Length: 395
Image (cartoon, rainbow, N blue to C red):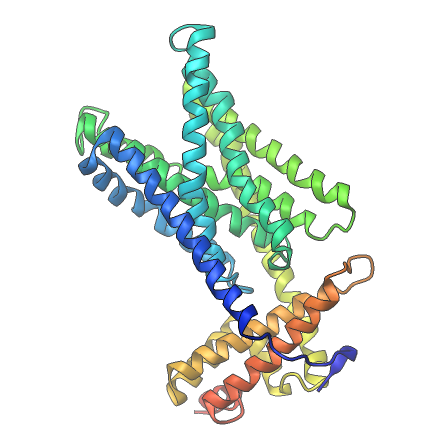
């Protein structure tokens, strides 16, 4: 079964496997340590009790925002360890770096512009420039080190959204904790309740919208073979993120935030929603277009084509397998479905003018992964994979 002139290759040996397991684990541990260090820094500022209250309050807006980005990522789910790394990078490394630089910028502003000038410099200049650079570093790092994980704009928005949500989470711990230390849960206009309304209810997507500008640019850059364009696009996206962030902070400082919110942020947010829906539809078309060829080549069964072409079909299929063969079999079927998606996107990258030096190798690996996932699913289900779903429909 070797369509497209590709031959299946042997799986990687134990040393490569250890690298794939141990190095990511060490990286996640380092990022988690950075997150804990950031919480410790906040605790030294507002106190341990205030941090606990701030963390509990910060979880409330973070959970639905994370859920939105995971929903966006349904067609081709990114590796969970990279999604977690994105969140931890924003929640730890980005916060620590921004706090160090912003404090220095505030002191410099006070010295040059007088008392109060530092707040302006920190909020309007330093914070947008440094924070968006630190958040964007994770995205650019993925572009250069794990370009295979990017298939376009949707992936860029997902990773950007999770980095920014992590940053906003830790920042909210500070703001909510400080509000609790000063005014308690309610206070006289300065307690947790009013700050939560402003940051957790009215603007939970502010940071994700800023950093999404960089994410979109990185998603566009991944399809560019020209080195200069691949470097220029993320920089342009970063400038857009800095501009939005700076205008947001300036509008809050000068009292025209409601106007900026209604006239600028809401239309941009609506545009992002439209872009995501359009790109998700494009992803579905890419997958649906590839499925008949996969069936003709013997990679999938013809009866699986309609099941793999929609999210509803995939969910119904895995649920039916779960009812008849157990959860392990259902998980194996979902892994197989994801492998089909990966091969479809890999084939889409094989278009003339977009094939890079690594594209062919990635396509080989995606084919091997699909064949292996199919074998595992067949063993787990113990009968033709789509039989459960079609039998379930007949019943």
